[in-house]
Length: 150
Image 1: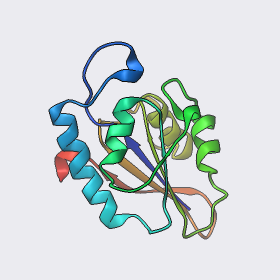
Image 2: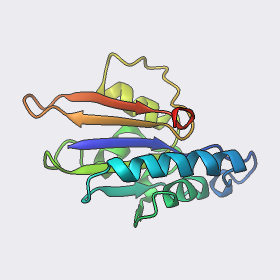
Image 3: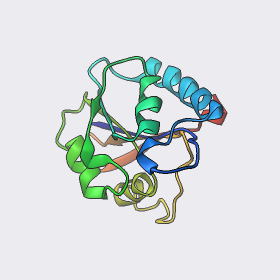
């Protein structure tokens, strides 16, 4: 199983938090990362997105259908993310993309890959691609991609 964690792109400051929209820079980041991901994702990938406007706008750049999951909104826990993704129960050739928030994504990465520091700050619009090793089922960090690299 592949678990792809994608942090939302740069968003405006403001309140309420759930209504913050992407900045012009954020739209560009999400567009570049969305195009990169489209070329890499398996056809059967499931896309799960926080209900916050900034994550919805980020995910829209994939130009494919996605599901809004209220349990992965800001304030979600690592367990909320893993339950939503059904990690690691999906089949080897299945992929789940979670479009979400800090600090939960960083905490999830650390939980799965203990060598990653607990204080990890996932950059805006970055993707962390984790695979379940087919031999022993342990998580393996496969790709880290930043929008600035594209």
